[in-house]
Length: 415
Image 1 (spheres, one colour):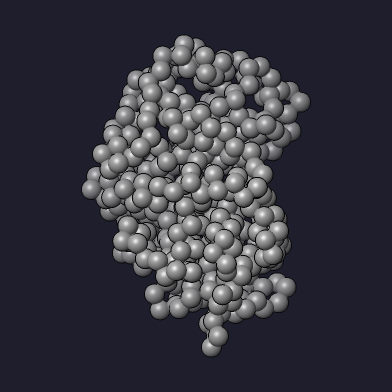
Image 2: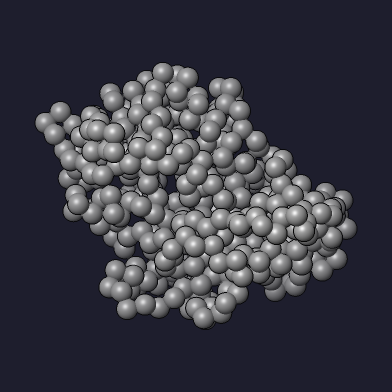
């Protein structure tokens, strides 16, 4: 069976590796260079403990209030665009307490194999940077960190096996000396990890090639259609034949699928990040700064700071003022680390996260399109959900698996 995966981001490559393990013939088509897409600038968190839908009670109101705040961490802007208004209405409906809890359970079910598959990558000899030790969630105020306990309790009630620890600031600084004096409340997740996403993607791509499969970089897909034998994908390098197709193109999925009459409710959410070596006591852990909604990862190459969730995302222009504010906010949680003067020319990064109205990915076969599968819409959880998404799609394609717990993430679900 020949499976063509459109999209060589972390989700597409995870699908490719799992399909290769199942004996499928795999071709990955990536319009850019591996590691340069939407996963390039994220913090690389593999965080089942913090896997919950953005669509939750109060989120819409909070985002709308920040619509015209130049420093808002979560921004939802009202616009007179029919498609965006439909998405926003569906988001409103998904933000009920009942649907939020169903979303938490769906993500928990998908995450059950996350670490198992991630460890299998290492066992298969794939080299990538990975750090264990959990995530330190930092609050300057009790109110700022108060949301964490109830969300974890929702996870615990459905069988989540991870734990959290409440630490004093002194205990937290013994683990991470970079934490500053303004941090008064700390909760540590115990099982979460983080990876350097580019190293993971490059490692997966190289391993898929070493196993005898294809990863075609700088190959744009311009269309696709069904044939008597399966599918034909039109690309910048000529047509490609497939028995099965997996669309893992994130925020680009709607444009690719629209000519087939498939309307996927994904809108781009813009986020920013920057990676700096800096001066002072450098963070070496994963840190979540709750009031500012900023994530920090201490990589070997430097400190990556990521934040902002703007809906809908309009362009990939890096707003330097906006990014400088994110860095400044992050530094306010740290003791003395700050960007060095030699790094003032570092431009930073902006990217689109593929957001669905209910904050759940679209996973599985597309009804009426035999042989077409979706693995898209992972929002801010792409790296977390990629390993288990790859394993699930491989089982769906090669074994015909259709577990009942996947139903909330079906591509044809009602919004």
